[in-house]
Length: 240
Image (tube, rainbow, N blue to C red; front, side, top):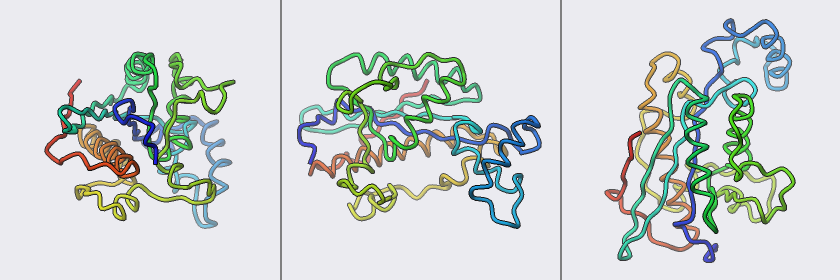
């Protein structure tokens, strides 16, 4: 599977998102009204728009990105290494600009692709939408309007697992388990990111959690290729 793809040509990406405001009451009256309409699709009868505001982070119109983690697999003398770098902070526009500049440099070389788990449905469109909202120029790799399917430089480890079955969703955690990919026991999960950001103000903790996801995605891709995993001690974190 995917033996024609060099893993060294992939940029593994994952994002962490939160609601655009700490609470529902901090939104403008118009956005409150629009969130009420949006949340009608999933709210239970006994829930108010405020009760479900914690879910706003999954929608680019009501949320924001607080961390984008990226990673590369390198090989030297047959030994694999994983290098991770994260763009994170309270200033979403700044982190998107910095990420966009890096993305233009990365994708300017031939045969480069982005890879994420559920990236085609979530990470890549979310990043593009938030860039437009923040007035950040889209890197060419994300500007896919009018491109033919084979011109889009996206790989998605969840889509690859579907084998054409469009209704099948499989989590990264489940795939790591069945492929025997070791994953560290984290003190947080995706559902806790909003609290860690808005209440604990711990962006470093969020970035470390996000980097573990891109490493897991890279390991999964290697499993798809029938390759050995990256040794646990061959992980390097590049600080901004």
